[in-house]
Length: 180
Image (cartoon, rainbow, N blue to C red; front, side, top):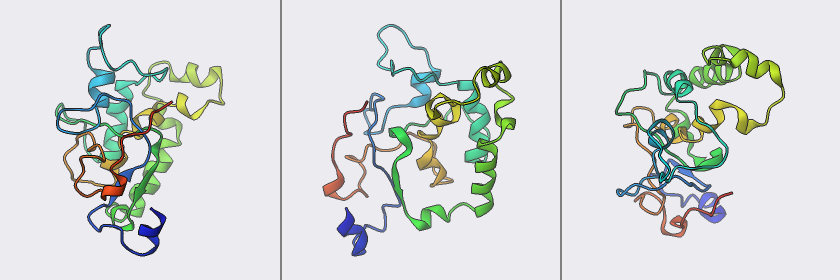
């Protein structure tokens, strides 16, 4: 990986790649599983979407989506990515959005204005101001959105598993690491 990056041998077509693992059940077309279907769909006792202690606030996703994607969340929009927000991104992919976009997103994600729409948020924040990063609703949704943030205008789908992504070099087509 280091050699490919330092010698300029990185494929130009690979503008973004998650580096971590995922635990959502993959789709038949080689994509990471749908976070929206797992967390906002119906989940019965046989669901494969029983993932740790993170709760995904689907109402919060509706508030977060326009901020990061630039339009309202449509019924056909989907998302799913690797865990923990570890990724490689090209400078060209970063430049697809303006500096103003990133500044606005950072200010809003860090402000209480975004949290005001969540029922009970004031009590939740007041109960304990210092929280672990995985307790914040944005954290658990944004890790599934990075590929959409750096590929604006692309159809909103879960990212391809890197083993099935034609842009990913062979030496990086490894299965996702066993998580947690």
